[in-house]
Image 1: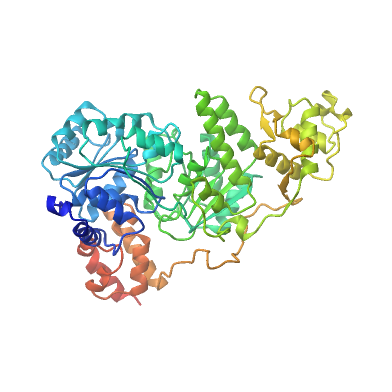
Image 2 (image 1 turned 180 degrees about the vertical axis):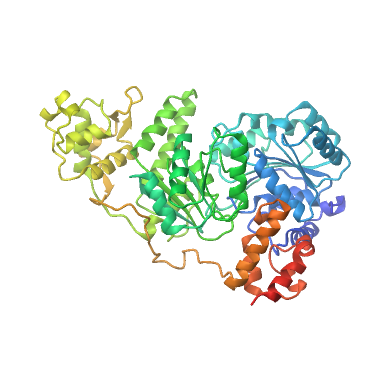
Amino acid sequence: MPVPPALARNPERIAATAISVLNSVFGLPAFRGAQEEIVRHVTQGGNCLVLMPTGGGKSLCYQLPSLLREGCGIVISPLIALMRDQVAGLLDAGVKAAVLNSTLSLEEASAVEARLLAGDLDLLYIAPERLLTPRCLGLLARARLALFAIDEAHCVSQWGHDFRPEYIGLSVIAERFPDVPRIALTATADDLTRREIVDRLGLAGAPSFVASFDRPNIRYEIVEKQNAPAQVKAFIAERHSGDAGIVYCLSRAKVEDTADALTKAGVEALPYHAGLDASLRARNQDRFINEDGVVIVATIAFGMGIDKPDVRFVAHLDLPKSIEAYYQETGRAGRDGKPSSAWMAYGLSDIVQQRRMIDESNGSEAFKRVSIGKLEALVGLAETTNCRRTRLLGYFGEALQATQCGNCDNCLSPPLVRDGKVFAQKLLSCAYRTGQRFGAMHLIDVLIGRMTERVKQFGHDKLSVFGIGRELNEKQWRAVLRQLVAMGHLKPDTEAFGALKLTESARGVLKGETGVMLREQPAGTRIRASRTKSRRGDLAPAATDAGDPALLGILRAWRSQTARQRGVPAYVVLHDSTIDGIAASRPTTLTRLRDIPGIGDKKLEHYGDELIALVNAAP
């Protein structure tokens, strides 16, 4: 129902019409947060930048205006999986949607183009590289366009965590189609990235709508890396057995090894990385999306645009490149708002590896400085002894009202902190007296007085620092060393592989002018997933009341069968929250079923009678 010119000038009527469409098409009773203001602004022809966390409802901010304005909304999306799933959901809701991407045959693409020119589409999803071709730009110039939505807009920025060169060319949209509204959307971007998005997409002067970055249903936990495969197995077994999840690894080899180890431990785990055969990679992704309880082990090539709402955990076995990347990747958990986990195992080798990758990259000096700053901010998050959520939100310029969130490991089980000045002085002295040419293991060997061949070779057993650190064991010294690197008193030497050298700030520590407080590392800990309970239960996410378990099982089985028959993910048929709502309220009429969030007019038409029959037949 396109908005006529008179209606477009009447915000109140736009709001009323938008609510009506929101309910009839998507089955939702009301907007969330700034959605209504964004929809009204874009429907009236305005440009804007939208920053909204994963699961916050970004898609509605361009889908609804596309339905309300005359013409077709063009959605620029970087991933085929995202296009496919969103279009499947829209078609199920009765929206005329299609894709133009490399999966289509020439005949199929021509049919979509004809529908666009005939005005038979509400939304069309296009990959950026295709949009920039002369053929596609010419096609769009002949069509009636409602808006341009640039999804995953952080990809346009060289400072963003997932820069994609093809996105730079999207500046042509403002040049070629200045009168068509542009809405850029992303789940995460710091100030530097936001400024570049605005500049490249011609959004100067347009409002920015920045929602809260807080995901209170996600529990953040970062543990010291000891034996990462064993640790993640314990984490899944103790906390997320049978749940869908994502495990991120830095290398393809580690992906393969971790997936194999989890499979042997009885976890339904599948690998995903760019080195796999394309058909196998696609099958594994489809299984993860369409089946329950599958764990995907992947490099960061996996995940952007994945709409699966019931991912219960995201685990990192290697340190990401930045807080933006960490936030984006952990945000793939709990899109449905239910309690979920963001777990990471982290160690000194992660810092050294990431720093070396930055130093050896072909980027400019400015780019390297920014990248190092981002890495240091993430290391600070990993090492903080205070509330992790407060630190995370603070990076994006958002203050948490409470000093503790009650749903991160540091809040649930506060770490012990002690004055570590003497330990720091011993370790820094050891690094200095051994010539700043050795790595962590050798420094620890010298500190605890371990007579290795290498220690004897270099005569380090004759140094005054040999054996001065026997009061701590190897594991405890590694924790001290890692924290000193995180604080910036030590740094990897890019010219001597694995070596650690002192920074300027180390001088103050050695002179006793700079205090050092360290997280206390117990002498020995068993590899397991911690089981902590919140002392602030009012802030911990509560489990959703899903109603009668027997009916819930019946509804889930029906949904799985229906999804298989239609060849779509289960959540395209009905989201978990909608299934839970049906099981809890047990509607016996179509009218009562229609009142459940997620049941729009088309869903009611497609599934209403079957759902009522299931409810009535349930014990």
